[in-house]
Image 1 (tube, rainbow, N blue to C red):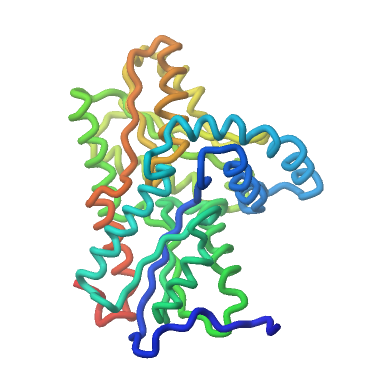
Image 2 (spheres, one colour):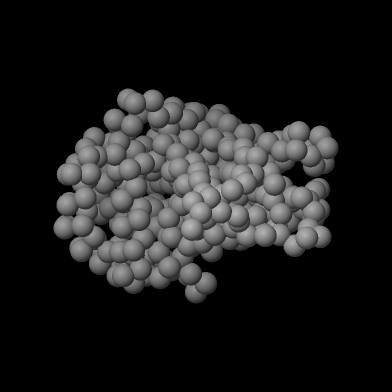
Length: 346
């Protein structure tokens, strides 16, 4: 069998098209032990995620973590699972559909949009095969991570390149690294926070809780911390908050290495000590709600905060499939298509 192969053939009459591949992290197919185990095996086996020598990491992963961790993680997933499936999968699919509608309003049949997951289903490889079958000759990859990190955005690049590595013919490809500074994204995020406060009935201290990464990654050149801090500054400026009205921290630590600080748990303690009793938490590193927002923040951190003496902790929903979110990402795509379209869609 030849090493390089032809991809899925398009219909002979199909016009040449532009493909947009949206990529999110991924999720188990079901909130069950074996489904979570398969997902964690793929996720935690990626060197982009755990940059530790394989001689140390793989025995620990297969001997300790994978036999035990899926039990606890599956229980957490069951607490947030939607009738349609995993929140991350459901909201990502809805967002993809809305972005597709927005793009086709300007580009019509010339553009196709697909969703892929770095880990789990639908895979990046399957999404690329689908686009190839629709005669996509130019490809734009948009990871659904506002801030670049080697462990998320970098992993998307790796998986996309790996999926394409044996194609006989490769599409002309562009890759979006980040979009935290995009005005449309900032507007949507700011509006989401204001709407949440209106629903709650009052403003409270605003805690920006980002997914953490190991400090060593930043020392090696990862821009995630700087981009996260910049995101917070942009939103704080738009909201007109004083310095004592907001805090910035990092959640979701894993393992014993040092991660970005301050940690969210420590920040909660410090805020209670300061006398803060009501707290609003936004997690701008997540494009859609997932285990880390719906369970870790809205349940675990809420319970911790109340046990410390707090009165209320509420989660600002992620942008999910909000129309403003879809329009902002569609605008980012259009700006990246300059030169591939007649001046871009209008």
